[in-house]
Length: 168
Image 1: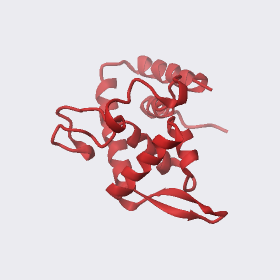
Image 2: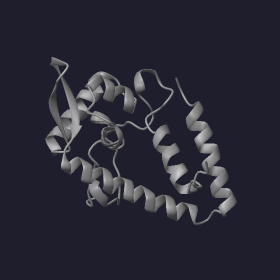
Image 3: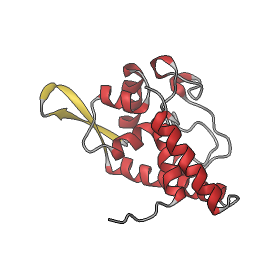
Image 4: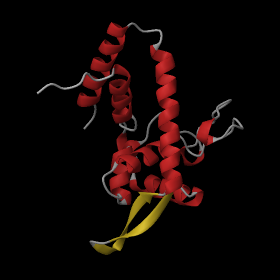
């Protein structure tokens, strides 16, 4: 059985996505979470997070939350979401509330345990995910333009190896 060759840009994007949120810091806190509620100022950046150059709604943790929910086969519990994005449970709860407030996620009853809720993307959250993914793909394409085909393939191989062996 033959498999189609993997586009290095796709492999790089997948490896970077797997590495995102997997920091070797205790309780999931790391150098990329700044200020109140982990919000980091972003200057001069447009896209789905806002063209005003101000705060980008808690990026990168909110982005990781939306990505994790988009890629999950079913809605996640808050604990499952916390594990998926590399934050503690209280931080995940705050991120979920931010997502609910913005209309990107919804809480729904867990059919297996009525005391628990699960978190799912809304249609608006799915659109946000597609926009972020598209922007990343364009940025990655621009960055890889300076690489030869061999260099792109080697970067993909090394990042995949790093993602395979990162963290617990």
